[in-house]
Image (cartoon, rainbow, N blue to C red; front, side, top):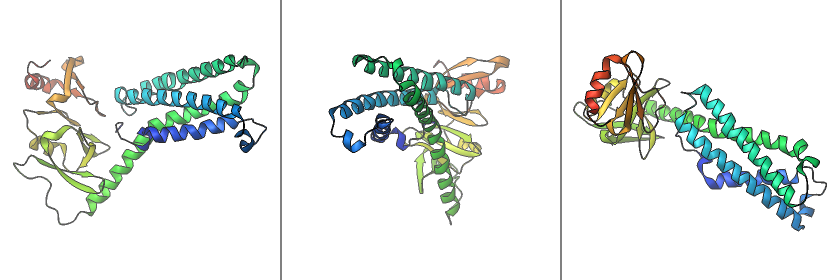
Length: 281
């Protein structure tokens, strides 16, 4: 779910958003109209510096959020993710903005502490950084939920279709937006249950909804290439990078791409899993 692509992943969109925000910040507290300021060289100098700082910090937060979303998904590591997001997505960028602003003032022979920057501008910067973090974190979840809803509506609207399960077939029916696709089982990386819906992960298409159950998928997919990790997850052998022994004989499997559900093999299936992966680890 955290890998959902959105408009926020487009640099052009981020650049335009920062452009608008930088213009607002540059004009904050100005006693002259923007039309008067457009005729001065100082406006372009100040606006250019503000835009540079904005782009730098926005891209920093975007990259940090990209990494944290894959290493610590919000739905799987809520407490840790919030803590890391506050530290690396808010506190560090805020310090970076302050230091770059102080450098800008210093180059112009001005002590930042003797200006109204910390009173009027910096609090606004903090609010914008908070909003930016919330957007990067939450928008993919909303987009994901919307796409699932649309796919589910489309699925319910399909009439005259036969049962999705065809005995002896390795073809899986999935839903991409309003389209029905039939893919080869070998293309599947992962299959898991999220909020009662079964999703399959495909490298070049991301997460797609299917109307199979995991039990049905387990019967279709090749047992040499796929393993039922637990009741919520099936994984391809190439996605299982390593494993380590947990308490009570359970196995914690490291899976790439990162799964939105825990990859824990029970004690009862631990021996079968080790035999399945063989000497790969």
